[in-house]
Image 1 (cartoon, rainbow, N blue to C red):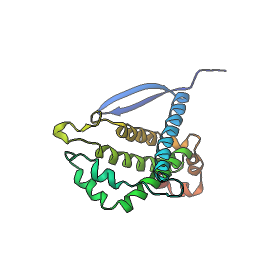
Image 2: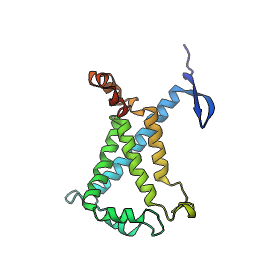
Image 3: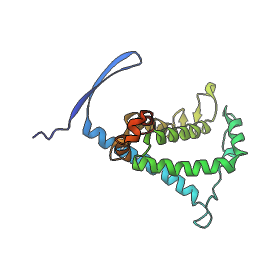
Image 4: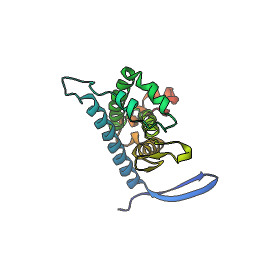
Length: 193
């Protein structure tokens, strides 16, 4: 009996070039599950902190309005868009709070994983663009450097986890994909995985 992790070879084309490398299925599965759980925690914690910021008796005390009105740099080419969002904080706030909680739960349990990963990546895209201190000519500076911040990293992690179908690893999506509803409606697989 072999104790070596199962290895596979990935062959693909990337930017017009053939790429090929070996990887361990075992370590890939563990790493995807670990990253999935970490991202679930990031979203759940953020959403629950916002929900209960004013205390359990005062849910929804958190508001995006102060951030949207005061924290977006004037040099940010999208500052006008975020100022517009500030006028609709009553809509934006529950979308952020409950979006983060639902994304976190979906990532945690591996249910509608690709859809949740896409929604999380879109939210991270908004957070990343809000962090710009300037535009293209300035090199898209963010608070601690240029171009890349934690929101950008999270966005790429979610994209990768969705591409690999990390919701199938000890997740509800594995069960859902075997259901008759999904087999009769194969387009649903784009939401699962």
